[in-house]
Every structure is written in structure tokens, then in C-alpha cells.
Amino acid sequence: MKALVTRPGAIGSTHVADVPEATGDGVAIRVLEVGVCGTDREISHGHFGVAPDDESELVLGHELLGRVERDGHGFSRGDLVTAVVRRSCRHCLACSEGSPDSCLTGDYFERGITRLDGFACELVVEDPAQVVPIPRSLGPLGVLAEPASICERALRHARAIGTRQPWELQRALVLGAGAVGTLSTYLLRLAGLEVWTASLEPANDLVTACGAHYVALPGTPLSELGSFDLVIEAAGNAQLMADTLGLLRRSGVACLLGIDPRVQRVELDGRTIALDTILENRVLFGSVNAARQDWLAAVADLDRARELWPDELEQFVNLRVPLDRFEDAFAHRGGKATLVLAD
Ligand code: BGC
Image 1 (cartoon, helix red, strand yellow):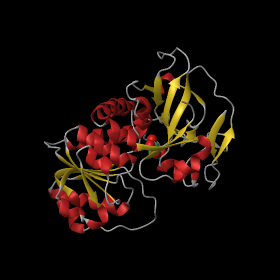
Image 2 (tube, protein in one colour):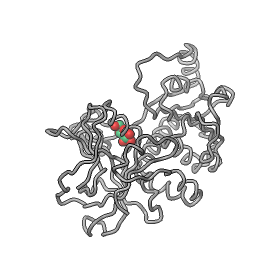
Image 3 (cartoon, rainbow, N blue to C red):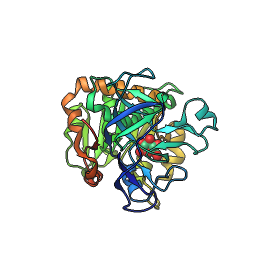
Image 4 (cartoon, helix red, strand yellow):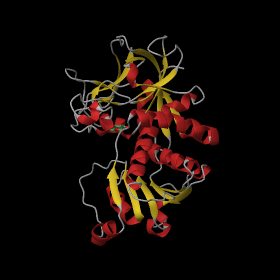
């Protein structure tokens, strides 16, 4: 069968290859579509990713939308599904309690990223416990379940941290309007918050359509926007990450989701960290990946968002190309690109 494979560490080695058909007695899933994100680009550029043990190549793709091939394991032929990305390291407390997203060893496996082949191939066979149902009403938008699960985990953790003391979550700032920034904006609007989303483009209709305020970054200093109960950094800029601490209100929480691997120094006013953060009970934390509960929340919230803003979410996935046009998908900016493997 056809698959998109790469040799981790080898720049530009990504190509479409013929790989053996998936076998085994899990849930057989016909892959319909696979979303592409910054992590896939990083792997393809040789900066990230690990092939399965004893293999030199890794099948890419961790944002799955698929259709169950035959009845069994609690699923029916034709069901739309996705599957979680990270799998247990098998020897830590967090993984043994069903939270590989909080793995304590770093020895976890991730589909399409770390030591496990991904979903950018025609058919996958998946452990039933890792399969997540997608409601038929959500349809092709189910391909957004993975990035939405990342946002759900971040919000769940932000709420857990915020509510360790009396806290009112009313005003949020999202930095970055890629997939994670835009989906975070939609989830926060669903929760009824006043949301400000800042990015580099002069305007962003997707952001304003859900009732959030859009801020074009170069022109507007963030300090002019006032302060926030929650700041989410989804732009992947280390300086902006440092700046988040100074944008918080009393008891505010800042969550870092974007990644910026550049070797660099960032500036932070000493008083922001060594005075305000203490005297105002502020917190800065990072979040990665998602637990099963976040996937279930993501699917349910995407379906609620689709009811409120159907056209906007449709526009969000704005490039769908076949597997052999993966380079176009990787080069795409502004909205989500996907690889289409079947109708
Ligand atoms: C994925 C996460 C994964 C992380 C690190 C992200 O792109 O969405 O599921 O844990 O990369 O590998």
C-alpha cells in the first residue's frame, strides 16, 4: 500500500513509498485524510522524529480521520474514527494511570512521530482502546480532532491550575492564529470568554467570525490590550513566551503550546518574574499532547462549534491534496492542509 515515509534525521528524505499492508486483529481503519502540522515539517526537515525499532524509515501522519472497514471491537463498518497519538512507555506512574500525555520517563511512543508508524498510509490497524469515535455530524471536520485535543488538554490544565485558588476566568489572549491558536480561540469562545487573538496577518476573518477580537501584531503593542486571566502562546516564539508573564492579571495563568527550538536568549524584566509573578500569584506552564479525555472533549466541542460556526470551520481546512502532493501541504500556511487518501 502507498504511504508517506521519511528517514528521521535525513533532510528531504520524505517520499511516497510502497509499504507492506497493515495486518493484525485490531480495528482496521481505511484512512480518509491526514492533517499536516509543524511537527510533520520538523520531522521532514530532519530535526525531529524517531523510526520504529529496527527500521530506518517512519510512516508520517498523526492527525487521522478514517473509516472503520468491518464490524468488530465495538465499532461498525463505516464508522468515522480517529486515534490518539501517544502510547504508554509501560514503566511509569502516569502511563500506568492512562496519562501518557504526562509520561514521566519520556520513553513513550507517538504515532507518526516517535518509534511508531503514523497514519499517512491507506490502511491502519489500531488497538481498539486507542480509537476515538467521530460523530457522523462532524464529518470531514473530524480531521481537526488531534489539534483540538492539544487545546483541550491545555485548557483543562489551565483550569486546574487557575482553580487551585479562587479564580474568575473571563478574559483570554491567544498568541498565534495557526491551527492550535485558532482552535483555542474557538474553544474559549464556546466557553463564553472575552477572547483576543493576536497574529502577524493584517486581518483574520476566522478569528472575528466566532466573536473574538483580532489584533494584528506588528502594529499593536500587546501591553495596550490590558491584562488577562489566561494567555495561550501558540505562535512558537520564545520571546513572546517570556512576554506572557507580564500580560497576566492577578492569579493569571499562561500556557505555552508553540515550540521554538532556536538557540537564543530572550528578555524578561526582572520585576515581572521576581516581583509581580510572586505578589500576584501568577503561573507559567507548558503543555504537550493530550489524554483520551481531551480527545473526547475535542470531538464533542468541535461538533458544538460546527453547529454555531459551520462555514467558518469548513473554511479552516483550506488545502486538501493527494498523498503525492505532500510538498504542497507541507508548504501551506494560513489554515489547515490535509493529505487525502480516500473518499
Ligand atoms: C503533536 C503531539 C505530540 C507533539 C510532540 C505535536 O505535533 O500534536 O501529539 O505529543 O507533537 O511530539
